[in-house]
Amino acid sequence: MKQRIAIYPGTFDPITYGHIDVVQRATAMFEKVIVLVARNSSKTPLFTDDERVQMIKEIFRKNNKVAVDGFEGLLVDYARKKKAAAIIRGLRAVSDFEYEFQMALTNRKLDSTIDTVFLVPDERYTYLNSTIVREIARLGGDVSDFVPPGIRRHLLARVKPRSKG
Figure 1: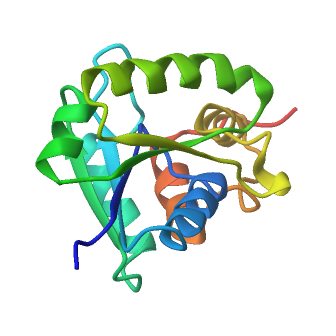
Figure 2: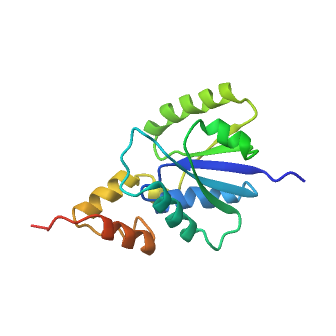
């Protein structure tokens, strides 16, 4: 039997509970989910590609349905190489939909055999994104409700919180 594989691409700088929730939802639908740390030349991430891959591997180390990888290039090329059936995209708000819809249609045009599956995270995480988490950490706020403890430690070691007051 052919294993149904899905790719969940993103910058994950850092990975949040919202991302983790989407991965967990995806593993209920697919035999294998590859969390793909995308290298995006238009972004300047706080963590290196390798650091992000290692942090995500640590989070999912006990889940044999999750693999983690890094990639630069066309997503459909990577998906084809891995024989993926689907690309997973998280939708937090209606504002995400237009961009994600355009990307899904573009990917379908590039390879019609790979579907895009939109997953909505738990409502507790719909407002959450990595940019907000980084900014809260920079301003000295508590990010414990947004990222796992290990990610929080990496984040606080990387950013120098501004003093309050």
